Length: 104
Image (cartoon, rainbow, N blue to C red; front, side):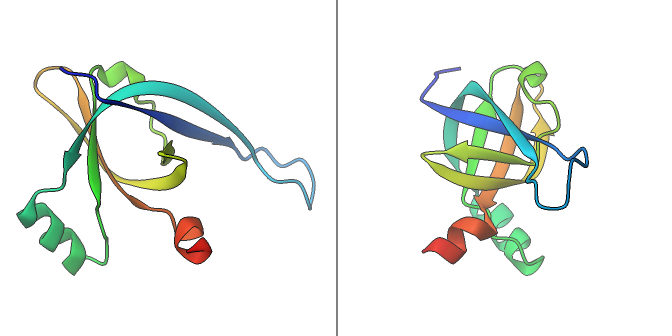
């Protein structure tokens, strides 16, 4: 796999600490290959109310630990699907986070 980019997988610790405290977020840097979402996948996801924009391929499925969000090009993205590939990697289909859309 050719490494093209970097993303940061975000893990939130939602352990209750207090009423006004936000969850602690830790991030792990991983290398990825960026791909476009296929036409068929895009339209099927759109019918289900999702808006996939990219597929990020990680070279090793061990790198993905069930995270639901990531940071890519200084924006927060929601992972809407993960797929284990036959070569031992994982593909993450992502869409813009609601927080990013509100800031635009």
